[in-house]
Image (cartoon, rainbow over all chains, first blue to last red; front, side):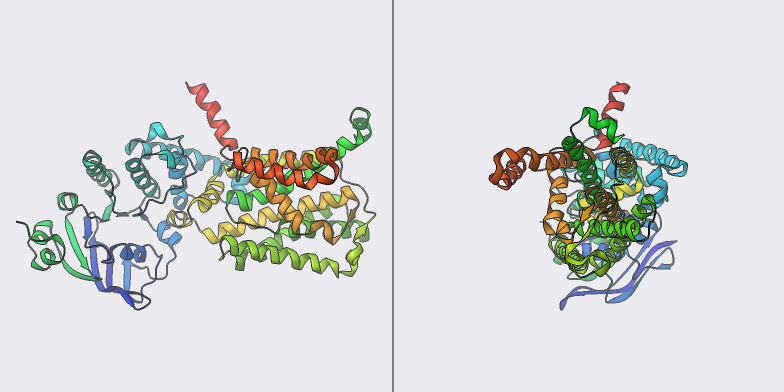
Amino acid sequence: MEILRMKGITQEFGGLRALDSVDLTVKAGQIFGIIGPNGAGKTTLFNIITGIYVPVEGTIHFNGQEMKRVPPHKVAGLGIGRTFQNIRLFNKLSVIDNVRVGSHAVNHSGFFSDLFGLPPARREEKEILKRAGQLLNMVGLYEKRGEYADNLSYGEQRRLEIARALALKPSLLLLDEPAAGMNTSEKAELIELIYLIRREFDLTALLVEHDMSLVMQICERIAVLDYGRKIAEGSPDEIKGDEAVISSYLGVQA
Amino acid sequence: MEAFLTQYIDAYYLRIIILIGINIILALGLNLITGVTGQLSMGHAGFMSIGAYTAAILTMQYAAPFWLALLAGASLAAFFGFIIGIPTLRLEGDYLAMVTIGFAEIIRVFFLNFEPGGKAVGLYGMPQYTTFAMVWIIVIVVILLNAKLLDSRTGRALYAIRENEIAAEASGINTTRMKVLAFTVGSFLGGLGGGLYAHYMSYIAPQDFGFMKSIEILNMVVLGGMGSIPGTILGSVILTIAPEMLRIVADYRLLFYGGLLVVLMIFRPNGLLGDVRVYDIKKRWLKKEGE
């Protein structure tokens, strides 16, 4: 079953063609990797899926629903969570509040209910807090729940972003360079975490990453972008052997 | 109550305590917009004047009950906050600040030419309905509701917008809607403070609600600590008392006032209680109990 289908996606920024009719189909439950050199259009693709950009041409379907022109906050409500290449946490909120904000899309209490602390809001609060605690436990940040987000180390901040994205109960999780800036042991932990997430939440993960060993290890399918074009797609082994990919990105191994 | 209190407190001090209360209401309104949601508004006096004039005209010319006049003034201010909110909230930072300054000026000039508002002379002779007890009961209610709101789904969404708008959107927060909400509620409190002010001073004129008044309220929020309820209260107290204390330096009063702001901002750039929120304190207590 397909969860995400993009067809002929083209995006231009003032004459620069960032994406050139890219097709991408992601099956439910897959861990799908997108690789390619800097400036290949990987993050642009994420921004199109999440509604930050409206593509010049092409169609996007998520669970069969047309997604073009759906604003970012509604995209989140439909079950697409994401992390950012340049970490975007709520720095002056506590760790647990970051995760609690993340659950905004799946809760409903409104202004008056919140203002007067009415029973529906209070019930929801309890649930939000409990779930935030569970998610923090899972990414190993429960002990730091009271700290400001910007007091966390780099690797912890990346894990907190993942926990925040999971709070909206996504069926599709977009990870934008989750391993960037991590050391070897942090990377190993990240791989464990991604496996754990998929097992626990039954979700599909789409990730952009530069770390080849990580991508080859965890992705079941990989697409390669170069100058806005998709030059290859396949299993890790197929990608490793692909002539075009080797010459433009992986390089010839001695 | 007033007569009772003046037996113990000098009428001058009582006056300052009442003005502190009114300023806390005004500043908590602006705190919601600028401190919590991060939308720099420099026209809070505009909303205050809408509340003040509306309430004064209703009690004087239509003999409306005070509570109704207050509510009507605050609601009209909220309505304008909502109307201003929609087009301007697509703007950010400096641009939004300029639009809000412009809005407050339009309101001021409007009242300068508004016949029922007494034009440049203003309105005078409003009955002094605003009492010590009334102001402080309203202050307490406003503080409690504010605290409740900020520790909820809505409140966290407002903070999230201040911290990172793109991430807030990606978490499912309709940032435009939330910003309009902050503006509406903040303006409501501005109008409420204005109505209380008009019926305490018994005299209002357009120049009472000029740019400097907006800045004065903004100072209370910034000095106390953006987004912090205790901070905003402390900022309101200090900046209401400071000009009075500085009467001893007579002509140099404004110089010292300005100097005070500069020094405080150098030593506490995040405001006096910038990092303190009501529910942080609550959490600290809970933690102590748990351990």
